[in-house]
Length: 236
Ligand SMILES: *Cc1c(COP(=O)(O)O)cnc(C)c1O
Image 1: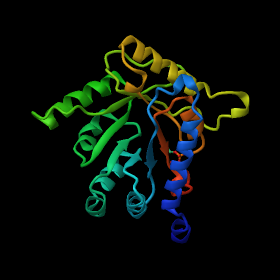
Image 2: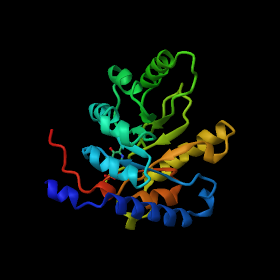
Image 3: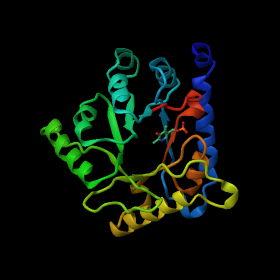
């Protein structure tokens, strides 16, 4: 197990993904050229702190985790605090209201990508207000849209959108309907709020489909296994 892990070259992985992001960005069709250049979030879930430090040393700053407890441990880990002072954590998993404070108090928390209910948005808003005190820096959040049907809830002011999308989509049958669907929600939001398209972030695309997502307009890709290697399936 340890041997297999050390065979993954994290630095080469990061460089390769950044190059593929550039290439996909250059291929982006004209209707999406106004969208921002994509940001790479390296998804380090289940992977050890040493690999995060390796990626950080290679220049990577944005990291994503999707289990609350794992992010709590990694964000406060003494080696991370010492070696990765400018790390930016993205929470990309399901967040329950009773875990809000655990997450918001973490050092170097950058963004919560998975606000999926009005209740969670309200809870985050009031908890952040108490934690921040007089410093009114807003918390960065994305609204997680269930692109297979459910509409984004009212009452939230999204800075952007996120979707996970269907697993294992077959691109020989055409463009990914989840990506099209999220870009449609994106258009609704920037048009209704009289914003520029690039003012509203779109987080979509993972190891298997980030290039397709970028071509469709994605501005944040979340890539895990293509950088850090295979992850064994979680056994419940
Ligand atoms: C695990 C995870 C990813 C990364 O998946 P890979 O296929 O390993 O790139 C991206 N987004 C979310 C929400 C995840 O949970």
